[in-house]
Length: 315
Image (cartoon, rainbow, N blue to C red; front, top):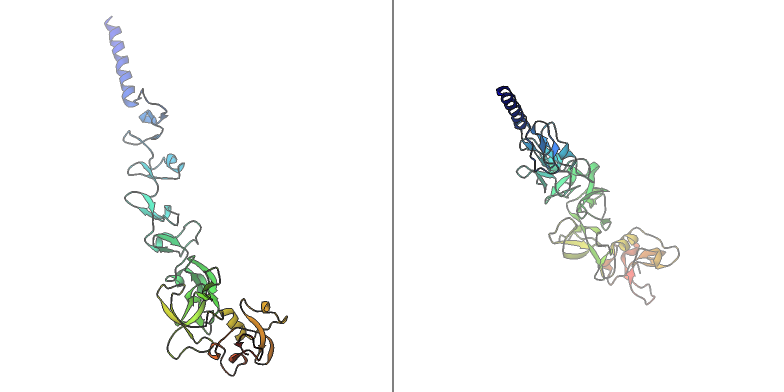
């Protein structure tokens, strides 16, 4: 009888050892086998060296990767990030080292490898990673291209390549004799009080105003206007926007023809007339010869050529 009792005691001790080494919670629902820890909750399926049920360890992070997360091996928890490189969204390119969450950028270096942006040389602009900004244009836009300040994307236009009254989207595109010029800006313009062109996204290159330096046909001062790259108000050598547009002025300056004799052969709001005795030339309306080309060019006068109709440059 004493032998039987001893045998039962040994069995009890053995069972106790098993339960201590591999504890099982009888009330656990939806658990998973976790080695030495026995059964762990499905939300903490890994057994670490401290015999704790955790989300992950350095060698076992599948629970995290399945959820597009990474393992913090110090806390054994799945987190959004540990480094900036793991944050690839333009609006959240920096890893917050305290919360381990991706948040707004605060440095250009965080903007490499961002989804839907070039692989590198991007810019952090007010917490958002973008392709470029006018300030960092030279560092981010390849081969001397300009940065569109509205879209904050590099364009296909060379810096300094556009002449006066050519259409532009950035100040840096405007130049003098094909070279960048600090005296020229990309300025939004109007025709009879309405934005021209209607997209309100395009400007035209104009020279900044200085007394005595505005030459015809750009001798009309335009004041208190922002450029497309700079919100500071400025004054520019321009045209009479109630009578002409930059494309019509450039058409006259370029001696563009209108073979059909119709105004539609010329830029929008332009006229097809005899200019300085030259037939079928594109021109524009005027009220004074100072609004027209410089003498002795054919388009330097302002009149109706005896037609009695509205005056135009070259008439």
